[in-house]
Picture (cartoon, rainbow, N blue to C red):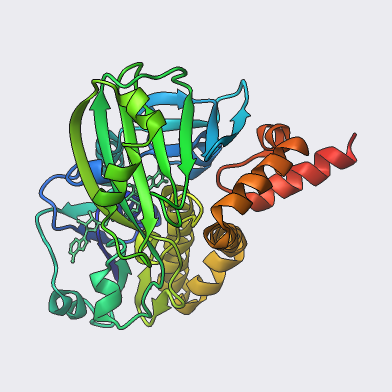
Length: 368
Ligand SMILES: Cc1cc2nc3c(=O)[nH]c(=O)nc-3n(C[C@H](O)[C@H](O)[C@H](O)COP(=O)(O)OP(=O)(O)OC[C@H]3O[C@@H](n4cnc5c(N)ncnc54)[C@H](O)[C@@H]3O)c2cc1C
């Protein structure tokens, strides 16, 4: 009887292992970190309400704030996307990791923390009797061990938490687009409470700059200086987000999920909702392989058929934005607003799925 090993106890590794265990397959997760919360401050936790509900992960005890919309700032132009419905939650990533660690162990997953595996350790699992799942993040050792194609685009990030930040509306996240400090991505302010907020920035890895230097430029812009006033820095962390998927994500008995596969939204860097959706596809395909002998290689087609179009749309939007000059972007936003874009996004918008947004638009438009 085949078994599965998962390298990485991040949110996607825990999700895929839990799903595999639900099929009655023996599964062990290995991670180098000593506690499941370790490293969780490096990333944010802004997730759509709809995506979370569909994901089936545990998150209710990790909610720190509720979001109703966003303001997108492009120099002197801004676009407000606001509704009276809850659009998204800000989650505490450490608590989210803990909730899902417990859910995985309750489902029968064995988790070995404090076990950082080298390339040879990973190759040793390849005994013909084990399905190996690489859920080991953007710089995947599993991908390296089995010579998967590399990920071509990354965003470098820096985020920090501050106390005593001036926040007008706790239900709104602010996104700042500018080539001066956030080349190829954006800066953000995500309020946790009335006075504690997370401030972060991402830049494309094609510019020769450290994300912390971009962050320092960002917090010095006039609006940020006003908001920060006498705010007190709590802590800050640099990290990396893959914003393109690997050309190949399965080989023999080895498959990749989550950031290791590059299953993230290139527009925002959000990787949890699509990563979990792909983890479910992976678990089902592992089950069908072990119980019915179906080819594991079909995972590639399966996840791309379900989620590839949306991820490609995110990538195309990200490319389009990255290529646009700042003055053209401001003009474009001005025209889009005049044409009613704020109302359009407030009504039909979906943080995860551009294809769903278009479907809603056409279906509601036709039913009028
Ligand atoms: C600044 C920032 C903000 C973000 N904001 C959001 C957001 O708001 N919403 C959202 O959906 N996503 C967001 N993301 C993306 C999201 O955090 C990732 O998509 C998600 O964490 C990927 O999970 P994962 O399990 O695939 O990988 P990871 O979280 O990277 O986990 C990989 C795990 O593998 C372990 N590991 C690696 N190598 C080895 C090895 N050789 N042996 C053993 N263990 C190993 C690591 O210790 C780690 O625990 C953000 C990311 C960043 C950096």
